[in-house]
Length: 229
Ligand SMILES: Nc1ncnc2c1ncn2[C@@H]1O[C@H](COP(=O)(O)OP(=O)(O)OP(=O)(O)O)[C@@H](O)[C@H]1O
Ligand SMILES: [Mg+2]
Image (cartoon, rainbow, N blue to C red):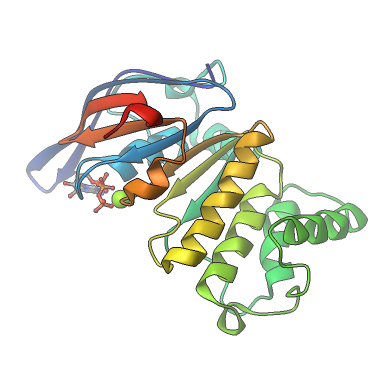
């Protein structure tokens, strides 16, 4: 199992107020699975994804990523794991606004100290893979929402992560662009990547193998997508 959570709890403290956003969550994801995470606003989806992606740590419970116990790692080690193993895609794209598509995808490769020749090859390969081989020099303001999200996906894939974590990746897109993005995630799953997508859209969620439904910080249902009504 590439993702393994046992009794994971997350408590947020705001001043004197404590809020339990995740309550003893048990969740395992096999390598290569495509999982949709659904649930009402505030049910803990992003909290769960932040922990999975090592952007945050559980208050209690155990999290193992690819066999490694994440609880014990320092923040430097967590950053290292994030860079190597995880590609993130967010609802708001989070691209550098003044940089071109090419430059945006190059960023993680610069962090990973990939040499110039390999960087160039990889950036072009990734942008071609998402159908943007003709938009290398476009800045975010010169692209559609769907194109910006595809740049963000190319960036997430640049270091060839095992796991793709996407938090509402189609939330800012029209239905057709959203479909295109989900098709890309589907292809990645077919190529053997582990893909987790948070979405409000049940028609998109149904394209995953498995649908995990959260409610009030608990897993309410966890079923094969074909069986979810
Ligand atoms: N940093 C924080 N400090 C305090 N409370 C937080 C923090 N982040 C999230 N919460 C609370 O934890 C709960 C779960 O939040 P989370 O962002 O995981 O929900 P979500 O399911 O992703 O919702 P949405 O669909 O609206 O994105 C919410 O009640 C939220 O108010
Ligand atoms: Mg959220």
